[in-house]
Image 1 (cartoon, one colour):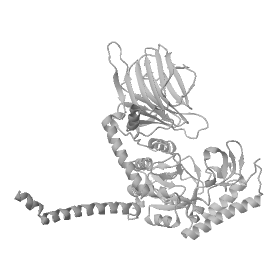
Image 2 (cartoon, one colour; image 1 turned 60 degrees about the horizontal axis):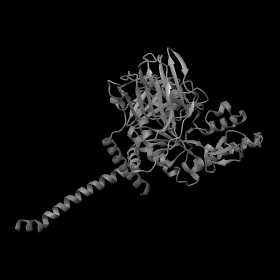
Image 3 (cartoon, one colour; image 1 turned 90 degrees about the vertical axis):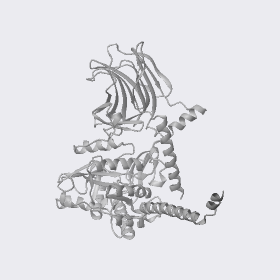
Image 4 (spheres, one colour; image 1 turned 45 degrees about the vertical axis):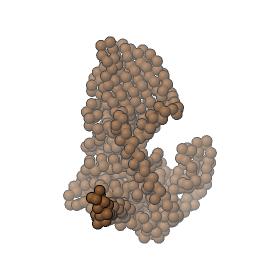
Length: 573
């Protein structure tokens, strides 16, 4: 009892504990302060490459991304998605080049790094700098930030202001460029065919409501009959004044003009734009900027290109990492190593005219340009089989599941999704025959709020929803096919050709010929379970699954909760 009393009265021991605890807490505080300081204050500087080692005299690729946010949207890249793409480019050996490097390449025939990348981010958004800046530091990449001149005069916090742009340029990771003086639309018709007057970006609620339009400097101003409402002199004066206003703003706010221009619309000048409009733009652009990325759609700039008619690719927010790499392969014919993800899952499949990434509970299958990409499950030579899971992808392509596919691909049963329709086909000895009229895909059934469905929702909350997601269950047994789609029985006991014997299961991703610009397609398959069906002698066997099991799901839920809490702190403090 006396010993315990002495411990309680041992103030020196208590004080030592307090000192140790205070030192520990101070250490944690200093680490947090350092991380915050490193995130928001420039303390690192760009480490320029040794140009003496450069030998590439062929050309470079150029990528210009839209804005970047934490979680992304239809028009903004998610930071995680961008990081995966920049990491893949780094792993391919790409080095970023500066505006001066491009000028030296064309004007003085100086070489570039073997895999040269000009990287840009358009629209001058504040969140872009916040989320891209750490990635540039991580990969030692240099990028050009493009802005609209009028945003520098409006004190709009959504867009980077002159003080921010100057600080970014000083770090060495950033250079400055321009998308023009303003984001203003002319000659507008909405979906109902109503003609609208000149509108600034803020006055256009949604581009989904707009059928056609042009940008301020890209055409005559026209009336509802598309007849010019201004003459040539008035058009030239309007466009020339717009460029002069832009020069005045940049000189006043930044002290100098940005070196790079990327006009709105791309591909118009020297092509579809009115010749008189092209002439005044060309004159003002050459007077104002050092170079102009006028074209969009091809990533590769060869030595034969012209400084005021360069080309770049604007990656879409729907593109997977392999989609970007496939685009680079298509444009440059340079060797590319595609990302694979989970190697244990990947080794169970064989790729044909495609690249597949296995990440968490999703397979993303990317077709080669203008090819029918396939992914064959190597250990699935079964006659009777069941497929369950979710399928998704853009409307500009086709996602497919092949059943009983022969090794040479001459025979199979194919279940496809294209343009929001389900199509079933069979191929026998190389002859394709449609089994079923195209059927519209039913909408997903609304879930009832019960304890069970609430639990299911909680399990799935961390999964990213696929684009145009469809829930599907396919059962092929004997010679009868049954399909449940979005919880509705849509195909019942459809008889298939008896000449199609046992074969392998395959997934498909296919571009769709037509008016679409992109010949590469991403098909996604998540929460997939593929099983052979039982007969009198054999029980059902799971051949493949990428469903996240309960222990993993608990971990994903825990990590997701932590991330949500961190995001809330960042948003509110």
